[in-house]
Image 1 (cartoon, rainbow, N blue to C red):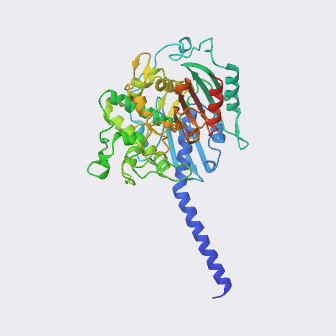
Image 2: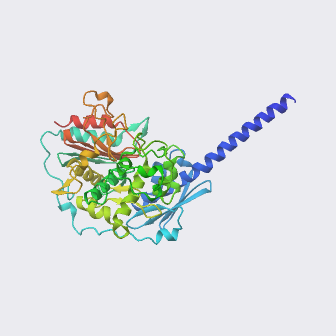
Image 3: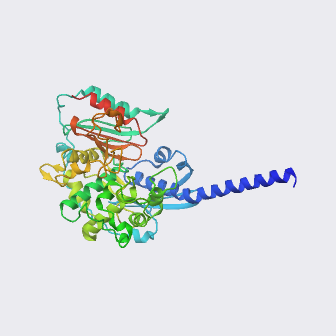
Length: 458
């Protein structure tokens, strides 16, 4: 065989390998790109009332999301996405419950679902003092360096990362229960609802706590998951779901196709998808952070409450009791709230949620959560050697003696936080009487931000 023929065949084989990898990437990733873009653009338009062009340029402008093309249909309140005409995905908006991707269920089936959400009180909340309303105190607590605190918040809004804006959209600080600092990026304000991403997990954890208080769930009992009966998974407990130690094979990676992206953007019933995944580890032995666990928890909430009261349950027993009137949970196509990822609220309402946990689950004298729930929620998981997780909340590491072993070395060890993709955070620091909310598009140096905020207090 001539040298030219050998080279030609090698080139042909390499070409076929590249083509195969390209096809595999397109087959798995294009639906994720289309689904992510359609869903997030839909919510940004209909919940945040943002300009579609701004969302496409800022939120969807980076590779590989920039490969997507998106069309807004105002007639049926929907957004469709595709990549070069392939892998089409559609997200539909329904008033009161936000946007849902059409997956596995027919669009007419999804639109026919009924969600009975409690009505908001007819009051002018600007005349009601914080935290029940939005009227802020005229005085600042002693021990706060207000000018320095405002400067820190302002600089966080303008911060760049590697020469590019990180798009911090809100920074809010509560000290000893009082809102003392609040800054927003242009185009956002105290009335703008923002995506919490995995802050939703902490909300789901609170809802589980309420059902425990009502006697409808037991954290130490096997999780009531129908798919697990008669299998090795039936011994998985509710506590192991809360702590992400179920042992299920689940990869939480957003850089490409994985269980989490497949679940969020390709599946109509996210809890059912997760429940059918195989066991990779013995339950309780390995900490593996998983949005799938949180969606199984969300469906357990639905089953425990019952269909008649499910849609209103989070609002009736958590959100409206604590003044979080902007809070909204979006459902998947099956009608179950996406307990892992899709909550929207104003920065102030995310701060109110932090305040509930700061006050040990008590709001104005009413014990919303079980009395020991917050204490239990901040106990580190035994299977996590870094001691970074509790009940759907992240922890700072719990190393009193060695700050270098904490997640944030310049922040007290008792800090715990609800954390979402891209740096959506509610930081609760009981020893410093602080709650800090930061919301944006990309992560920042949170350790530095918290260190600087702490330095303005005494």
